[in-house]
Length: 99
Image (cartoon, rainbow, N blue to C red):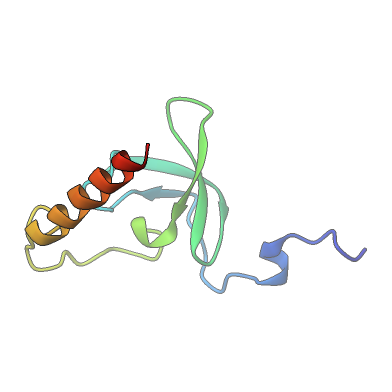
């Protein structure tokens, strides 16, 4: 019947999704943890935390779902620059002044 198909059925993923994935996103609290995949998608995965019943969506690119990842050349420990941090402080101060 019309309207009962899921988004996954309407837009099938051409890549196979493994049953388990490792979080590879640098500095993510779950980095290195292996999670069970409940449902795969083109850009996100529904995964289950191994120690409880918590499920969450995580960007597929933050996992090794599409195969081993070649480590990039070493970058700084943060993606923020000093200037971007200053801008963030100014923004927080401006928002605080509104309260």
